[in-house]
Image (cartoon, rainbow, N blue to C red; front, side, top):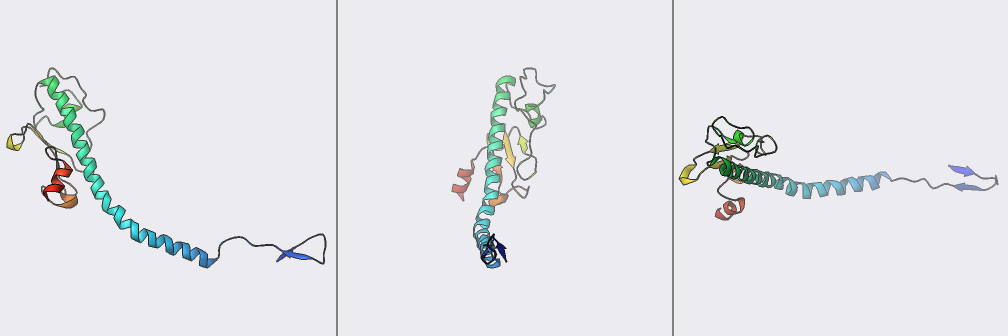
Length: 158
């Protein structure tokens, strides 16, 4: 309750420090409200950031494919795939790679990137991530990320 000093007739109470239960509850409620308001906004951007990451990876693959083409005189075939950016294929004499520093990653949703050469509509090659659902087509987070369109272009089309 109090601490006795040298003067026994005088007792001085010490102030107990800490938070009361009500103060703690108020803080918990405020944190809960903040999480309820801000959380959904941040979670909505996770899908957007995965799309941006997929687009960035596709652009890096495109640059590596262009370097391969400068050395080999052609883009890899569909059968050779992206693995020729890492290891020398038997079919290419002027290979000066590796053209990527690391192994070929999966897209941000854990699916492999699709590579085709030649591509459709006269494109020399196509790199595709099928988005969150891993299926062709889709909207929002399920939309395809492709090498011949940027995310900004596809948002403007919709």
